[in-house]
Image 1: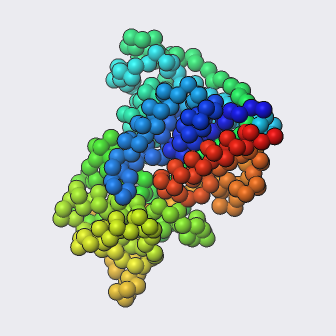
Image 2: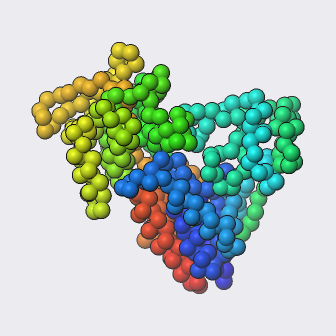
Image 3: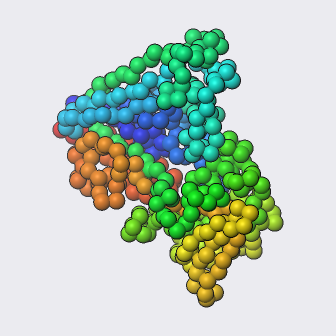
Amino acid sequence: MNDSILVIGGGIGGMTAAIEAAECGRQVYLVEREPWLGGRVARMNKYFPKLCPPYCGLEINFRRIRANPNIRFFTSSQVVSISGKPGDFVAVIKTDPRYVNQKCVACDDCVKVCPVSRPDRFNYGMSQTGAIYLPHQMAMPARHVIDMDVCEGSSCGECVKVCKYDAIELDMEDSETTVEAGSVVYATGWKPYDASKIANLGYGKIDNVISNVEMERLAAVNGPTSGGITRRDNGEPVRTVAFVQCAGSRDENHLPYCSSICCLASLKQARYVRDQYPDSEVYIFYIDLRAPGKYESFYNKVKADPNIHLVKGKVGRIDPGEGGAAIVTAEDILGGGKMRVSCDLVVLATGMEPTAKSCDVPMASVDGEGFIAQNNQSAPGVIPAGVAAGPFDVTTSIQSATGAALKAIQAAATR
């Protein structure tokens, strides 16, 4: 029997499952496809309801991982195959070359001389980095990486010339690692639903229509505008902002389920706007506003702001207006009739689409909505955690991952 545990996904759920299992004495292999740990949470500006930065919790987890010899993590990696049975799984992990070795001290000398630019995926393409870049300021591991899709390689070599630590290896190749594990935890997380598929809402056609994840980066001090919530077309301050709830969610043509976080995310982001611009007006168009349990008081605080208008009604369309404005046309069920609002910025509350829906998940079964099936539909010893199992907020994802760690320990001990 092998009581090691393989955790696939290095976001908040995967890290939690890995840490909890490792601190119970189990060997854990943590695999993350991005070149850094932290997942979507690392891209947030603040948590609700306390509105505190996510790095408070992430840094604690990073420190626990660094200090625990039972955790071996792989970034820029994915599991390409799993075979075997509970207590005796064999997994093959493929690691893409980073082109920067462990000698890197993140001094940024290489970034200063790189002549190539690329869209910054961490900021959802709203800013640029060099071909060599540090994924973000709090990245773990704190090591640069090179995007060879745009790097000019040895024909340029400027980064190699200035690196005092011999940390750059332009000829680095991918590698494979085989590990044995008694159980597998899938914490593959989520991606934002592609808002361009919702034709009537203008995403991708109107500059000042953005998604909720992009709004989170706009508000972040390490984001593309250093925390300034501004118009996307000209960088001017915003005065009127609209939030469109259920943008693609609860819709049989897009995501048939409620993603559970969008209402609270918009309420939180409405506070971002109001705190930054005291004279601003915010409209939240909703079908139902959901703030269960402990979040009710947060909802009531936002609702009490006279400059935040909660409008029950579905947005029918968003059109371009004069001067780059976005014109929101929506029904107002409680007020009766339609309303049109000219906005400096419109934020679409797009839902959570499980990553497992569009990637290979060996040994696991995926349900019709893309979440990894539970209740013995997946192979025994394969446990989903966090948003891989369902649309959860951060707190619920952590609880789910803690439970998954216990289940994984139990499964690894079962013949």
